[in-house]
Image (tube, rainbow, N blue to C red; front, side, top):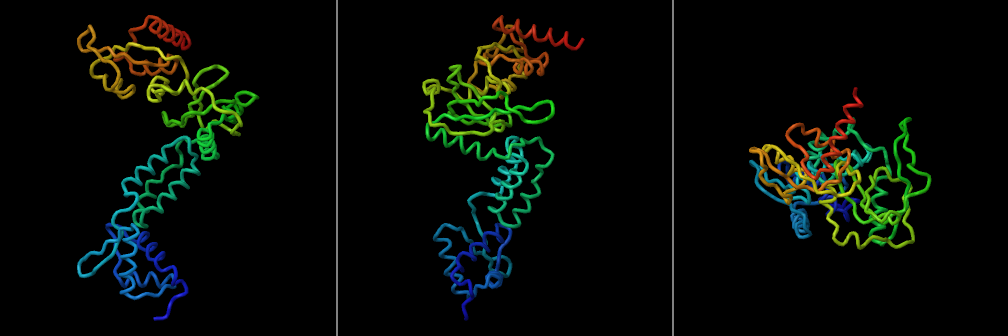
Length: 329
């Protein structure tokens, strides 16, 4: 049999054909495989294909041969990512507000290459990114990469922190750049945040990554290590409603028993919950950043949850409600 022009690439094309055109529900017979190889100008016979399939299995590709009706077919068994896992990733990427619509579509398209063409069709049916609220910062990938590099190199960063103006344009919050020590990246409430130490104020602060622009790694060592030795990221994000800053305060929430699940979902299982004096109610002790966002969350839960301690927070909440009532008169 004369050799094809791409004979040296036979093993590569065989793997490509099996990965793209087969899965648990779709297989190829030996004549199908030979025909597909011929499209790539690769000549082969059955005996050499048997040897090549063994070689592919030896290097970690899971090629399964089995009887299907009156035919013997070959297909890829297990893959690096199962279809259910890819669907989960597609849904997650589509939901991420901090990735632009364009980047989301491009990333999901790349994920489809990890599945067969048949499975990729199912993934593309899930591709419904258009119309979702998304960031407009196309440089988000590179910003995240720069932050990771700065953390790895133990360096400070500078950046412009952007905000929307009344003309719907992103403008810097202040003229001079922010200079901070980056320590952690976290995902909270559909946004990506940098947790950093601000040397000027001596405090841990957070910044939305999609609002960071013109980021630069500085030739200055990070500061604030002592603040992050016992830093509890979960506790920090739980108390910072909407990731707006505020001092951590222990607050007692008296809730109807049927609403305890809402409190646990928000603050986790490690909080203290005890029966309240009133039957059918419980007292939950939680640490929060007392802010308008926290009060708004409490207000949204209606009469099923109320702040009962400390007195200063109770008073602040009542004042906020009164101010709101006056505003709408």
